[in-house]
Length: 126
Image 1 (cartoon, one colour):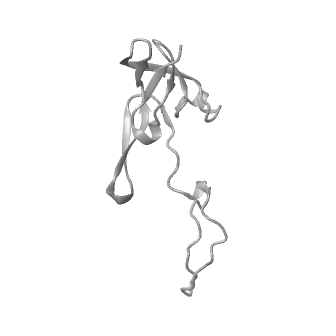
Image 2 (tube, rainbow, N blue to C red):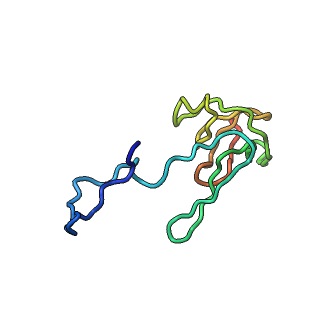
Image 3 (spheres, rainbow, N blue to C red):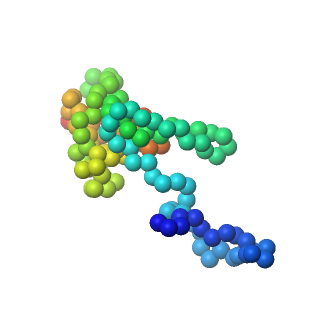
């Protein structure tokens, strides 16, 4: 992408351009965060109105919820098995919401948004 931003609303003379369309998704905000498996690394992003957002760049642990025992445990992530967002994310070990991951306690589904929330929560699926 050479230029990800939209055209200015004003002409060089100060007149206003009439927008022929609204912004596309690729023209909004920042580049996507591809959260991966690795040593824990997070980043703080400044948001609108002075708010902050913690994003996960890499993490090797998940908060795993077992529906049978109704208990949480901190478990190491072994690998990504399936990713409904993009099939190419599997071999790159990219974590998004809905990703099926392999852990020592079995397969689990990621229910949080690691690139937006800064934490990886998952539910045991088998």
